[in-house]
Length: 321
Image (cartoon, rainbow, N blue to C red; front, side, top):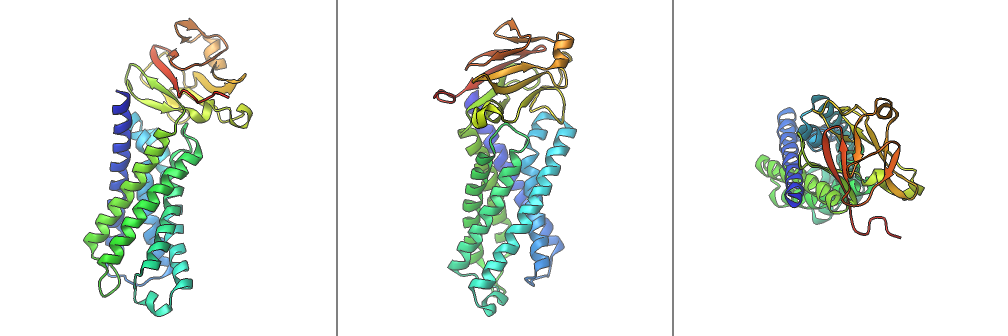
């Protein structure tokens, strides 16, 4: 079940990234039909469309899985914003580098050379890294993992995209639309694939939902229970709040909006009960024992929040000296 969950996550990220890339190609091809001029405005327009649509598709994965319109909307909005930033940076920067390194007549003619291919790849790594970063902002994955995954995805996707552009260019310097569509589809899929793969491979702590609506779903909580910076890291919320819960558990009337907190405290990953949960003595158990204040967590601990059962996992060497 665990390996199947990981595989499905990577698969869906790849699929959503590919959908974003293909949709980005379609929209920009429709809006910029017949416009072959390489100007700052067209570069920014094409880049923001492509980046925004890939960003929406990848970032909204958690909202889709949770079937929460509010959660989907929040994540999609952030994905759109940072995707627009990523695309708006990547294409103009690429063109600026071209203008410094190649003769103006080659640029005007749209000629792609092996050297321009390398510059294009570099710019796509920037594109992927920004998308990877935004994907993990509201999640338990550490930022560098999102950046690394996006960077690798952008590098590999950029290699495929620029190679296709180089091999398929016509007399105008641009590849046929079907080549652009296929290469942008691969670009989006590569970015989504590696963001998910790297985050999954490098996670050190996660919570598995054992029953209820989300049975089998896993939440990466490494960022919240890490001892980095002396344990003064971001705290993760377990609860039913669609916008603020990092471990989101809906459809359980006994779970409060912010029911419990995951953090690193007293030299150990720890579960804290929120003041709201303490006040009404909301059900919070670890290995069958009620938790009143806080409790250290170890690998394999079973947590009950309301009527929903979870299991805490951490890698073998996660917190050893």
